[in-house]
Length: 592
Image (cartoon, rainbow, N blue to C red; front, top):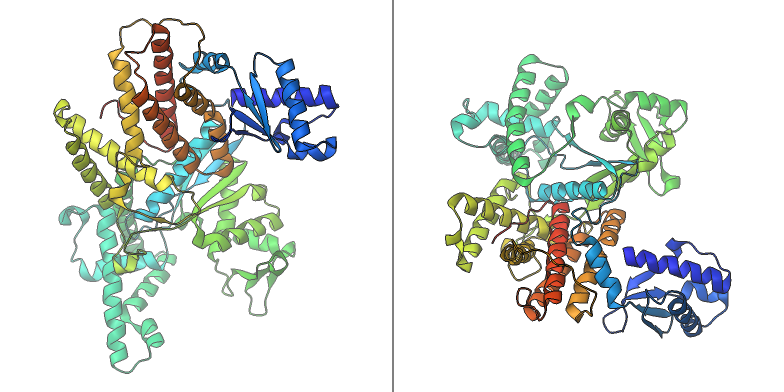
């Protein structure tokens, strides 16, 4: 990006000097030159053809000649392909860039810009453990926050725990009826799994009751309402909202089991939060905003007393914001939480990481917030993502077909162990080192696989494919990093020597060109809120390094000059690989 920015600055000056045309840097489109053409960077000229009344080829030739004449040390030659000006740089430019940045541990990071970003993710229900879908959500939210942080933003990571409602009461009723006083400790089961088992059990027993009622002649719809288990759960919800002591005590106890389990999983997968909100504390928020909306004529009241908003002119429909009995609906409490979060943190941008099934909900939330004039309204952004499925199809919690996050992590670590042992180098590690290594590789494979795809696309997750040491995977990048560190360890104790600029071989130049793009990649990933941009870049960089190392020796380079240059390349590449993987929440091992 440093050299790319120089290209833009030079282009601005030449356009001003030669054509008296002032242009902004953002209006100059510069891309890496395609492999089939000669050049390093390409300026797209089409936007300047009309105002300058030039042909694309003619304009390109004039600009190329002017750039070479004015900046002979920066540009070495050019060629024009239709409306594209391909520019080449002397090797000295790339070598100077390498010398300047190879030891910069913070390469790509930007200074604080005074803006704050809040990222809300995870948002689990407290009636079941985290599952594969939650993992994509957690990895995506955490990474987006890290990407904003490295780009100069102050970040706040938040979570809303969905700890109340009928689904919570289902687990509670099932425990009361079938647990016989069992606890996670007595059962030897992690707390969130323990409670989740009773949620599944509720559904199983509920279906039996519905079928039994149907067998006695009751219509299906009526049977679903009259089944004793469902009526008991509904009554428990009423009792909870009324604050019945024994219900509140059970609710706190079972939620406590779940939170302890969540904390263990979060720690294991590297997820953390600056603030956790609880629906039990926020579900009454927003009722005052309903009154405000009625006064502003944003909302209207129907004859039955319910309160609505008409969004038909905005391309949506009418949406209820308060029931006729005065109770709030989900959108109402979410509006209240918008205000609460802004009061707590005053974020300029509030990102909600929620699956694309909730696209409509967040359109409504932002529209209502804007119409109410809430100070944070324009900063609401829904980062929607596609669901994660297994090769066997979509997961369903109530049918017990969901892959629990803990079980999947265990499986990934086991596969990592199997693959690592197949490489035949485990004898070089202690038992503790191997345990840590298997976890690093297994989690790295899982995170990389879930983050390498554009968030908006659905993922079919294949554990075996995710851990291939030779494929588009996290372990491939980890192995490349470990390989570089091995090269550098062999040179420890050898004094670094200066060297004069010399020519670059094709793969040496390709490495530097790839590294120079890293700040631009970070900015692109932030703008698109898309960690896959970083994952793809990181894999490409690792792949280029492996091609370079296959062709060119470092320790036995053809000259001392080349050895020093390649050592700097190794150090710089290791720094960027470590940095980029860290933004995906992935550790890179020193040895593999």
